[in-house]
Amino acid sequence: MARLAAASLAGTAIEFYDFFVYGTAAALVLGPLFFPTFSPLAGTLAAFGTFAVGFLSRPLGAVVFGHIGDRYGRRPVLFASLLLTGFATVAVGCVPTYGSIGVAAPVLLLVLRFLQGLGLGGEWGGAVLLTAEHAPERRRGLWASFPQVGPAVGFLLANGVMLALSAALTDAQFRSWGWRVPFWAAGVLALAGLLLRTSLTETPQFRKLAETGQRANVPLADVVRGHWRLVLLTAGALSVGYAVFYAVSTWALAYGTEQLGVSRTVMLTCIMAAVAIQGAATPFAAMLGDRYGRRPMCLLGCAAAAVWMFPLIALLRTGEPLLMFLGFLGALLAFITMFAVVAAYLPELYEPRVRCTGAAVGYNLGGVVGGALTPIVATAVATGDGPPWGVAAYLTGIALLSLGCFALLPETLPAAARTGSPETTEATPDATEAAPA
Image 1 (cartoon, rainbow, N blue to C red):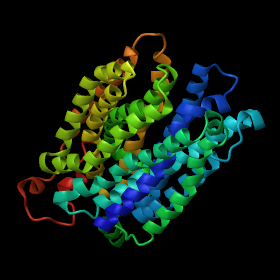
Image 2 (tube, one colour; image 1 turned 60 degrees about the horizontal axis):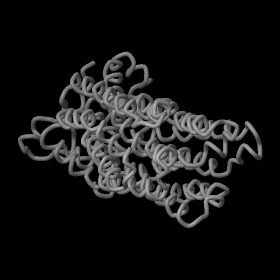
Image 3 (spheres, one colour; image 1 turned 120 degrees about the horizontal axis):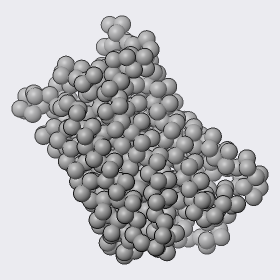
Image 4 (cartoon, rainbow, N blue to C red; image 1 turned 135 degrees about the vertical axis):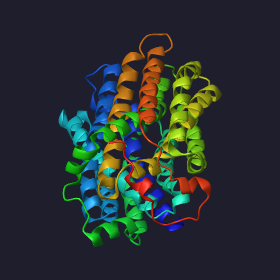
């Protein structure tokens, strides 16, 4: 389990590195480089528009790679998704700017960002199922949470490279070529990730499905026909996690540097410190989910997010590093209270034969609602000289929507896991077949 968890964590870290490095570049430099004819505000909005394309393609990636995962195994998904995302990220670092090739530059950005999202849409489902379906029942939440640490590691890698380059280079050098270096580094990371995954074995539950001939012929059709309500509920439930994370990691970075005049180095340091603590807290939140249930943790995280959004904006508005850090930390701890357990929760909600498709589609549709729109909406409403309370209201509204969706979902933690029965390597029927649909 330790080897499987490490390989899953490394893979998600690398793929989310690819995804996050684009978001940081969009907040810092892509607007003036690829949309120079726009005003600064419009350029930032346009750059966040290309950022959003990656979220729009993630559900499609979940369908494509989910089909592969449910028909041919979880293992092939891990290789194909990593190759696609790594290629697209390296290519972004090679795209000429608007000044060199005109309108073709932002068009190429859109295409490559679409491919990034396509690959990432498949990565999460494969990585999570690899650990969740191998894990013993009583510790499924803990082991499945390791892929959820990957996004924090990827974010720290992406922004650590950006921070080092921003500190070492002049502003002109950073805008000329420095911002490209993190994208080129993605190629080396992708090769390392592929090597780590070569020794992985297929999950016991998929092998059982293959041996008994119970694999779904068209997994998406089965999900739409039998689990459509579950997909919509999980998408709505998870949207607050995406909204909170990208409000902190992407929108706040742009707002702090452009509206508050805080340096890139200070903003990146504050955000990275909060993300580091969030990543470290992930396994502990998952263990609480193994003890008290998945749904209670999700409800608690949603409620905490709803309460914290106005204090977050007030602390950000001060421009003081310590206060901004505390605002970010509170938001991200609320976020990880939910997202530490969803890696076990979502697979348990879907039956094994359509699990890779159903869990991945629900997870990535939540990204469209919460992740794609949040930087755009927040940037659009955060105008004027006063505090951007409209952003706080928007995030609070999404938190309440997610709270309602989680309230309609069932608990999936098996009773045996709560009472301390001996651990098993196979999931119980309650854990694998439960679905409110």
